[in-house]
Image 1 (cartoon, rainbow, N blue to C red):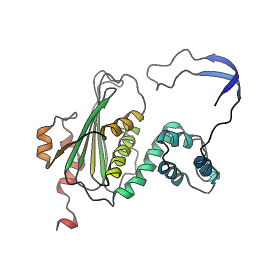
Image 2 (cartoon, helix red, strand yellow; image 1 turned 180 degrees about the horizontal axis):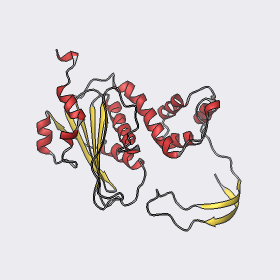
Image 3 (cartoon, helix red, strand yellow; image 1 turned 120 degrees about the horizontal axis):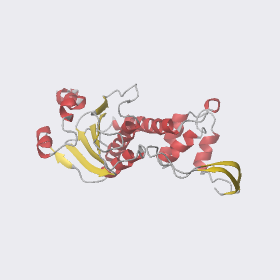
Image 4 (spheres, rainbow, N blue to C red; image 1 turned 60 degrees about the vertical axis):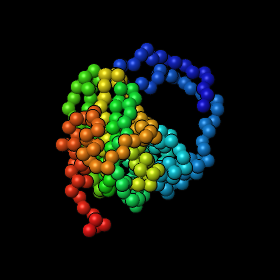
Length: 270
């Protein structure tokens, strides 16, 4: 989209160091659009369906290959859902809403897949964010630990911990926030791709290199990239713990999923 005849009232002179970087900003008194925006046919079709609820609309767009960021922007603009319910959605809410909606869609399918036959662990980092993603044979469930280190944007902190078992969760993951939903979705996409289900544990440690918050896309895309790599594979838990140094040392003693998958028994085991 191109503009002309802009009349600036005030140009942006800088951003606060702890705000999410969004580029230069300015206040304008007038603006002319000289080119019509190009809307993909699929998006226009869904926009015109005033009886289609927003959740199935998001799933349709995701299955059609649209990026999550694109779907989040459309939801924010208030052009999805039943006509009388359409409204602008704050960006922060739209990001988590799309992550949650798509994850629920994938989860329904993952629950029908066979469980992993061995433990898998992936590791990697980006912009001072270090991750270890551990997939344990068991039912689909998710747990995340997060530790902000000295020198990071929020400074040294305690270990944050959120989790959900087979039936999911009802309350917002306050301790970790949007990063929880972004990480969970990336792990679910991987399980859906390999057609397996597992109990997922994500460890995240943030170092001093991460001096400005970049948004949850960092978590989502970093984990996506990590899961494209080659994992360590382990036949039992003792071997996993013996051969690895974890970025959150005491996660095993804090983990609910570790305990439940250790003691849980299933009908097929009898």
